[in-house]
Amino acid sequence: MFRALLATASLAAGVLTAPGAAFAADTVTQLTAAEMSAALKGVSGTTAPAELPGYGGDVQISLTIDGQNQKGTAKFGTDPVHGLGYLTVTGALGGIGSYAQAGKGQWHQFTLPTERAAVAMAGHPAARYLFVPDPKLKLDAWTAENLPGPSSVVTQDSLHAGTKTVHDDGTTDYAYADDEKVAITFSTDTHGVLVSAKIADPDVNETFAWSYGPQTITLPTSAQTVGQWLLNRAIAYLDMAGKVKRAATGSAAIVESKSRKKTVKVANLRSWTRAEVKSINSTFGVNVLVVADVKGGVRISATNPFTKATAAWTVKASGKHAVARKA
Image 1 (cartoon, rainbow, N blue to C red):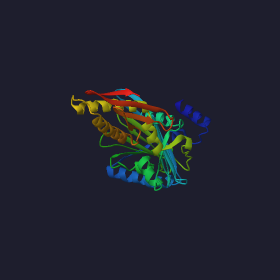
Image 2: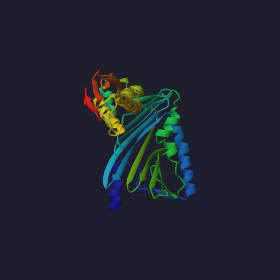
Image 3: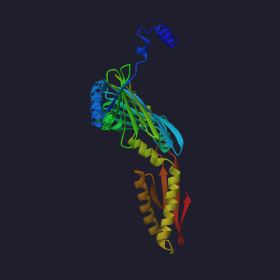
Image 4: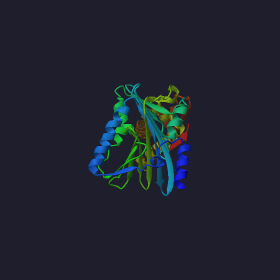
């Protein structure tokens, strides 16, 4: 009865071979470390030509942190014809985005809320990327540093004993455990080209998938992009009023400390405040704060070049004290 059911099912599915052939067993071969290394070098050699027109793929990531499972996804691709490459990561590993164009430069996604707030304040609310020019950028070098290139990944740590499993559909798995007992499996298609990989660890699991051929990569638009000069300047003027206040109150405290409970001299107040403001401006990378003499002390002010907003405080001598007040 069982054989008859198998035969009926095979015919219904259009399978013309004998029922036993549809359930052929996988062929498993034990490999020494040297054999595994040689086999995976062979996979690398077969995969490398497939990469030439371009390749893309993704990585599914599962992390266990403090007993909590978190998931993330990385997507990547390279287009040698147009000299383009990209990598994006979402989920457990945070938001990361990087694009490259040979002979032009790189686009890096903002990773800090202050960056987005700063460029929005500067009149670029759609900006999400910093462009870094690099006319010497080579796509091969960028790809090797940033992307999981299949022909290189498969040989990075291959000197381990394991198994080679040939499936009845012609695909093959190479599996082994590395020195840290992490289980690694590389899978090839019927032509011996690497198409996937699995890395299994108690706390981290990663599944890689690759596809080959021309890729379509869309670079960030001009509206989504700012340069380093504008980003630095925008960050420097973010919370400008707070920076002016802190510079004034901080300078007042320094003046009192250096006066050592003696009468504060206006000349000293001006000198010490200017030195403090100069130091603060150096941390901004931009001369945000301006110091001017006023009766009895100084005025610290700033004007936002993007919004034209202004802020000012004074620091004045008053007996044994230096008093900071909003102007």
